[in-house]
Image (cartoon, rainbow, N blue to C red; front, side, top):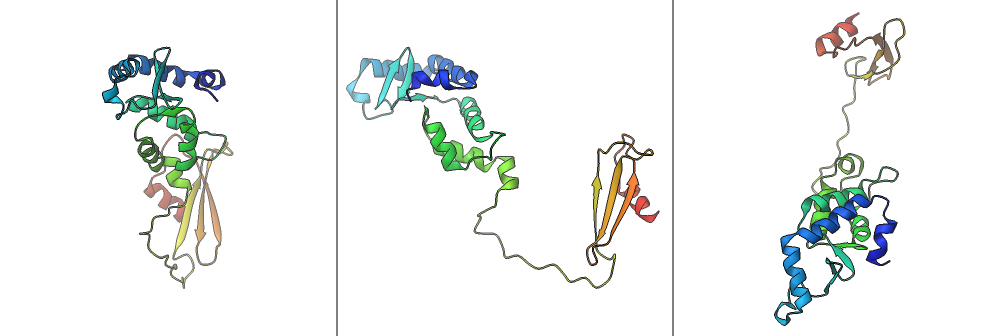
Length: 199
C-alpha cells in the first residue's frame, strides 16, 4: 500500500493529519527536506539517505517520517497497541504494524518502552523475568477460621437498605459467611469491617 492511500484507509485520520502537519512545520524536518531537495552529495551518508519529498512531506523508504515528536509517536503507538476489541499486541507485532506506514529513528526503543510500561500488559501478561524466584507452597492450616479471606461485593441494587455483601471464607474448610451491609456513600473502614464480622 502506498503512503498516499493511507489517509483514505485510516479510520482515525486525526493522528495522520497531526503527523503531516508536524512534518511540514518541524525545523529539523524542514532542514532535512532542503538537503534532500538539493541532493547534496556530502549528506548522502547521513539520515537523508533513502529520503524523498512529496507535497512538502518527508518520506523515508516510502514511509511517512514522524520527525522528533514524542507526543505523536506515543499517540500512534497507543492507537495500534491499545485496541479495545482485541488483546494488546506484543512489541514485535506492534512494530510490524507501525513500520508498514511510518518511520522514526529508534522506533524499536520507543515502542519497547511504551509496551513495557503499559498498565494492562503488566497486569494481564505473564512476566518472563529470569530473576523471579521459585514458588513456595502455602502453610498447611490446622485450625478453622484462623486464616480467612475477605472480599466485598459492591455496587449492588438496594434490598432492605443494603447494597454490599461482605464475604468471609475460611481457607482451611472453604466455609463461607455472607454479611449484608450498606455503604451509604461512606467508605467501609477496617473498624467497620471488624464490627460487621463480630455481629
